[in-house]
Length: 217
Image (cartoon, rainbow, N blue to C red):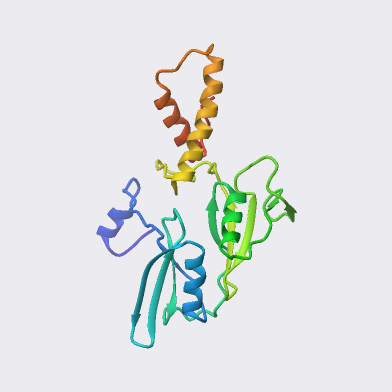
């Protein structure tokens, strides 16, 4: 990359510290703001804001449970046709529980399905091997904006760069359970002796799992 500004060159040069760019909001187009507000509120998503400014502008913000990113819809914030947003991913650790919860709040959620590989046909039921990235369920809001639930518990290598974060208490608890099960097998291999350094082992295991790295076994 080259620019006419040497100060910019220095900033983006090799070895320069990258600045965080955190995706915080995605906009979905709706035809009836109040109807959309009732729908997303009914799902149990957190209402963060509802700011009307005159008759031509209004922004409503909702955040899904445990999500670092939020959703905007309203009046005067997008020219996209209502219902044209699709492929909005909601990542979950337990897809069957997440599907059941959404259905209990009135969402018309598809049955869980999986794919043998990218671009492959859908197969009914969750992935029998419990793999990440391949089990899904879908639903739409009243305008037809599409949402895709995707089950992920282990990230691809390089997906997490030195940062281990869990979206919710339930996700953290699930990570601890997986670490506990793996550590139990580790202790068995060590002759059943209690591992006094188990917190360090847990931490290393959970960071490696979240980053898609080789796991301690």
